[in-house]
Amino acid sequence: MKTCPFSGLPVTAKPHWKTQHKTYIKRLEMVGDDIMHAFVEAPRPIILETLSDELVKTVLRESGTPDKPLYLVWDMTNVTDVSYDYKLGINDLIYHWGPAFSIVVFYNIDPACRLVLETFSSIVPNNMKVLLRETYKEAIGTVVDFKSGKAEETGIGASPTDPESILKNEFLAAVARISWLNLLNQQIFLPSADNPFYPYFKAIAYMQEDLKAREAIQEKELQQIKADYEQRLTQKIILLNAQVELNRKELQQFEQEKAALKSRISAQEMELTRISTAVGEKTAALHLLSDQIKSLDIDQQLKHRMIDQCHNMLETELTEKRLKTELTAGDSEFLSKLQKKHPNLNQRELRVGLMVKLNYDTREIARSIGISTRGMESIRYRMHKKLSLDKHKSIKTYLAELATLV
Image (cartoon, rainbow, N blue to C red; front, side, top):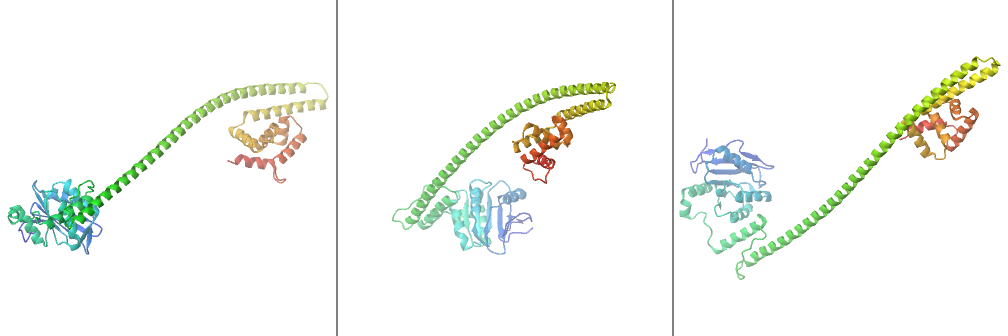
């Protein structure tokens, strides 16, 4: 373990007592058991980014630092400025975070950074002292003197007594309270009007009032934005509730339509059962009639015509049964689509269109609607014109394409 050459105290340093930043590495080590030494490793001048409070807590926890006053020695080599975020961290260190450091000593200070440190020194509470020194030897010596009580004898760290230093300290404190702590309602100390520093303090007071006015404007704008968003939110909630109510009514209507369709389906099923029964009875009667005709002793040509007529009637009944009992939801949708696109088609033409789509031939369709094959050809011709089809395009092809359209 290495030893501090100026105090003779042991120095404890661990490899992980560091924080990696974008342009530098911050390291901590303990001198004795109550002096923390901070420094940065950087190849070029840097700006301190954030205060590494977690690193401080880790070092204190792992070094077993007793519950007594702590001291911080800060090597400012290569540090040319401090970010605003770091200043906020300093505020937290001073007024919130614990344990508190009794003395903070900075050394190797770049001239560009000295004013920042003097400003920091001006706002610390009475139980903390911030001192600026030239070298590590002076910094460690200052801390050792404080610990031994020699500081009081020599006056090291005592508050300035000359008027110019007092005004400078008060000026920096006023700036820090406004810019670092955002204390816009803090009363600004004003020296007498004939004091040469009076205009500078008055300028700070004016700046404080301007910042208060700006903050009031921003607060007003924020409240307006909040009110606008609350109004928009209220409108959105109203629209949402209206949509919910509309959806509820549509759902209710859907349920009613669903119940009506179920009732209709039930009635149609009963009707289909009745039709199937009636067709079955007619078919049985036609078969019986055909058998009876066969047993008659009449002219053979007449008998064959009568039997053929019975067979035709049987086929018609079977076709009608298939058409009524095998009609699907897709067929109903097709009829609705055909009627909407071609409202000039009558009911018989719509039925013909459905049967064409279902691949019934001309003879079956003619028999189903009770006309001759020639009459059926006339209907197809008129439908071809009503559908506005090219002479080379068949009704069947067109209806098949229509059925596939979404």
